[in-house]
Structures are given as C-alpha cells and as structure tokens.
Picture 1 (cartoon, helix red, strand yellow):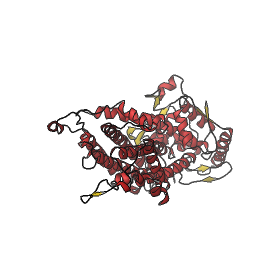
Picture 2 (tube, one colour):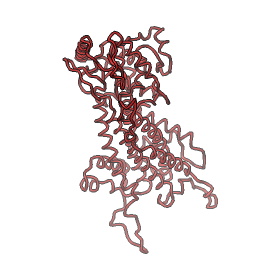
Picture 3 (cartoon, rainbow, N blue to C red):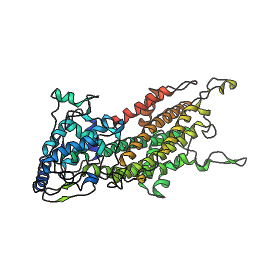
Length: 522
C-alpha cells in the first residue's frame, strides 16, 4: 500500500495511521510534488549558474556568511557542513521518533522551496520505505538554525554513513551499503544545508510527546471517575449546570462529560441534597468534595484546549518548510528564519506546564484515596484488613509506598515545568543571538511524560485496590477493560508485598496500549 505525499496538508491523524500501519504502508510522491521540486531546483540553479552569492552554497555558514566560497567547491562545502555538525551528545532518540524525523524532513523538502533535487527525495524515500532510520543523539540543538546537530546524523545517513536503526537493531549503514541494501547519495550544491537547516528533530519529538500526553489526559478522566466512585464523591460537580450552563469553556465541558459518562455507565448516584440532614451540629453527608475531585474538569479542561492548540501548531510546522534560503517555483530567492523553532518551543513549554498540573492532580487525588482522613471508610493506605484481628491490622501498610513514590516523581515533574524558551542565549559568535531551545524543551517534556506514565500506573493500581475493597462490580465497557488490564498484571494486594516489578509491567502495558490506540510510539 502507498501513502501519497502531495501538496495538500497532512494531518496528525494521517501521520498516526502511517506509523500504526508502518509494516504495510510505503510513501511515494504525487506528480505535483515532483513538478514543484523540479521547478524550485531549476530556480536555484539559475541563481547558482549566474554566480549570485547564495548563503551556505557560495558563502560560509552562520557568522562566516561574509566569506566567499567558489561555486566549484560548493559540493565539498555541503559534505564539510554535515561532518563538522556531527557533535551530538546524550541518549539516542527512539527508533520511532527517528522514523518521524525522517518522514517530516521528507515532507518539508517535498514542498518545493528548498532547491534540492528529486533524486535526494527519492533516496530519502528509499531509506524510509526500507525502514532505515537515523540513530540521533538528543542533545546539541539550540532550536534556532533548525536542529543542525541532530539533523546532521540524518544527512550523514543519506550519504551512506553512520549508524542506523534497521530491523529493530542498531547497525552501521556502511554494512548495509556493502550488502547493496542502500546506495549512498552524493550531495548537490545546497542539499547538505537543506537537510540540516530545519526544525524536524524537535517536531518529531514534540509530536510523540503530544500523542502520549493525549493518552494520559484521557486516562486522567477515567481515574477521576473511579475516584468519585470509590470515595462516594458528588457527581453534580461534573454536571451540565456547572460545566456548560454556568461556564462554557470547551475543554472543561469535554472533561466533565467524560467523567460523567464513566459514572453514568456505573449507574452511580449521589445522595440528594434534600436527603442530607443536620445532626449534632454536623451534616450527615458532605455537600461537596475537595478541589482535586470537584475541580478536576477545571484542571483537565485547560490541558484539553492546550492540546488542541499544540495540534494546530504541529500540523502547521510539519506541513511547512523549515529551511534557508528558500527558492520558489518561479524566480524568487529569500533568506529568512523558518528554521526557528519558536512555536515548537512554546508548544513544549505549555505542555510541560500541563504535565505538571496533571501530575499534581493525580498525586492529590491519590492522597484522598490513600488517607483514612479523606477516603470515607476505606482502610488506611488501602490495606486489606479482611479477617484480621484489630491488633494485627496495624501491621499492614498496604499501598503507602506507592503513594510515596508518586509524590517523589510528581516533585520531579513539577521541577521540570520551568519554560525552556525563556533561557535563550546568544551563540555561534552572536549570529544566533536569539535561540528557541525547542529541542531542549521537547527532551525535558519527554522526561516528564515518562515519569507520568509511572504515576498513572501507580494511581490505577491504587484505584483497582479501592474498587475491590468496596466490592464494586464495574459495568461500563471502558472501566471493565482497564480494570482487567490492571488486574492482568497486578493482583489484589492481600498483604504487604513488593509492587515495583508489577507497577513496571503495568507501565509498559499502558505504553503498549497507547501505541495500539495510535496515540504514541516510544
């Protein structure tokens, strides 16, 4: 099957489908794409043959752009660029993120504004369709002149060198070249620059962060519904009066409706206000819940709407051209800053703040569930006291340490919520005197999300324990699915036992489940 790259917008839904069906789908180019790329290259060659000074082709790079380079040396210049930029550090991006990175660079160059050859695109298509993906260190990008250092590793692969992911292993591309699996491409005058001078690395990682965040946001609404169910919360906080009639934020309304749906599927009913009486200067039932439950739609709602904004920005970035200089299909040449990752940096900064709020919400909700002061009749720390004599009960501490872990991990997530884009620093002899740090923000956001999956696994473990302690028989299809998912890896905690290995298994199951739903690939 073919996925045709054309001149129209590619949506995140289409990208998700392409990744999900990657074993079957191959990419190819619409004839209109070929035509636009050929015209852009023709325009570039027109300037090149006229000896017009062209940045990065017949000049040096960055602060060295005032230095002239002979046109006959321009191809060597492209090779030198890729070679000196290979200065990355840190852990490697995952194979799936690298696959997205290659795909997004193909899309950017296919728009017909980079002056590259159709042959370059065909070689990149060959790498993608053969599932040969670059091995890329995550550190080194300032996010300003694009992701120069990370993308140099992709460019190095195009010319047949470096390490790659192939058949789920890391290997040397030179070995694949020797076996005839891939034939190297020789750069034409602007092609090295066109490959590295873009936002593609931070875009790819931001896309995967966005997808995982969507999944965790959905799960937080399920968890909120289960918390209300297990501590006998009041469901009108999720009703239409509060969340639609009195205030009309779309994200708040969506979050409330999701929690309400979960509760309605369980036929959950709260004590009516008319049934609440006063006795001995106290009411017989609480009239409202603590904020972490009652205000959950107001916490999750802004996250929902922020994700919507990030989706728009990601789709624009993926479908746009991040390169410099640009050549259209007629006779225009322009130098600009489309390689600046400002929108991506802000996207990831916003998402980091959202992550911190969601993590804190789950931590606070878990406190309500664990503490005997707030869990409304459940045992302290959700310990199993069944058939235990009073003097034996306090030997058990149940899931106390699970909550302690969540509290520690939450603190780390919150510490990483500081925006990265505000820490711009002048670089490269003050040529790059304002930088986005978009890749840095994306890497830190990924670290947050990895920790948030751990929090979600811990929280779901505790909720399942509470459901069993209450002897609740779940009725809703979604609730039953996730309860069974949890119980297939974490049994009811009958006595104090180690839970780290079981939580780790559930964590991996959640990531797998997210992948199968098309949310995330990590």
